[in-house]
Amino acid sequence: IEGEDEENAASKIYDLLHGAFEEKKPVEILKIAFFGTKDYDRLFFSELVKDKGEGTYNSDIKYFNARLTPETASLAKGFDAVCIFVNDECPREVVETLHECGVRLILLRCAGFNNVDLQAAKECGITVLRVPAYSPYAVAEHAMAILQEANRRLHKAHNKVKDNNFALSGLLGLDLHNKVAGIMGTGRIGVCMANICKGYGMTVLGWDAYPNKALEESGLLTYVTKEELLQKSDLISLHAPLFPSTYHLIDKDAIALMKDTVMLVNTSRGGLVDAEALIEALKQGKFHAVALDVYEGEDNNVYTDRSDEAITNDITGRLLMFPQVVLTSHQAFFTREALQAIAVVTMENARNFNEGNDYGNAEVAAK
Ligand code: NAD
Image 1 (tube, protein in one colour):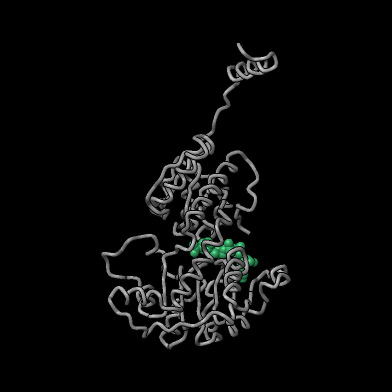
Image 2: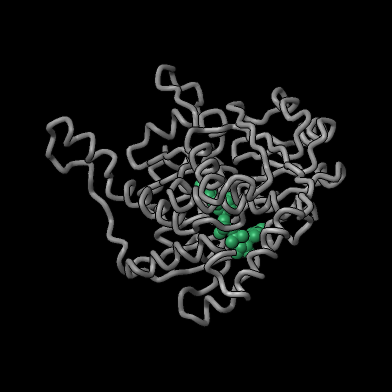
């Protein structure tokens, strides 16, 4: 090799020979059926593969617009994995169909896993991996944003001003400063919300099935019983996962313990709040503000454009009639940073499964 000293030339020759004779290992491509695809999903997943280089994840993604439901599950025939989101349906019936289709892996591109029958997955030998944390900030920031929207009636103010109405009637809000915030579920998102509330000058109470002593020691919050939190809080923010034990955590009895002027925000899962009990209490004048990113019965609405249709969901229709209620469509996660992180962790989960690596805390298994 001209112009190289002996050592460099030897190393270059070795590289050339090694490259020429290196045996190409067979590449196993993990075939992934991606359900409920939205344009932003496709954008972030294909951007990631492009950035990291083709072949990095040894996966081939086929994007389906349809949600995963009993009717669409057979689309997964011939795929190794399905990639699903919060509004996909994965009860036993679907898990069994996926198993018959040859699926060995369910990739949840979200944190919650209440929509998957884990016991059925275990029986079928299907691994279930999720994205345990992508941006807890995205969710907590949205929780405070919609809570303040409802508290300060910003949704009404916006429409009024657009209608050339600059009067302030109907827009009276409450200070958060010096008030009490109750955080139900003090995990990743709950802690972010506690910090945000602290920033507003609030006293923070926490309730959790597994209290985290370090949070108390740091002075962020004080753990109390569920009853005490419900009675003392001016703002209640829900961040516990949806389990049978947390289903209707906020029911008629829980609402009865709350202050009349309480503000409630739910960015966790709809099933945590008994929507009928909530509507009944709202009718009776309870709640200064209610902000729901998630609510019972959202499944048929969420991520679909029905602007040409009448509202047929009675829960949504009724909730929208209250001036102090703000609804968003399960969008708390929806930031650029969160979507990037979701794509990275999901594809790393796929690769770890394929290569037999450790899943860290991504695996969710039936207990
Ligand atoms: P996390 O696992 O970090 O925290 C959950 C907390 O709930 C933990 O402290 C845990 O000890 C506690 N907990 C568990 N079981 C409980 C029970 N039976 N009773 C009371 N507390 C219990 O989870 P996270 O990342 O903070 O997420 C919380 C929830 O937020 C998720 O389960 C998910 O449903 C929801 N989420 C919603 C969105 C959205 O876009 N709206 C996005 C991400 C997550």
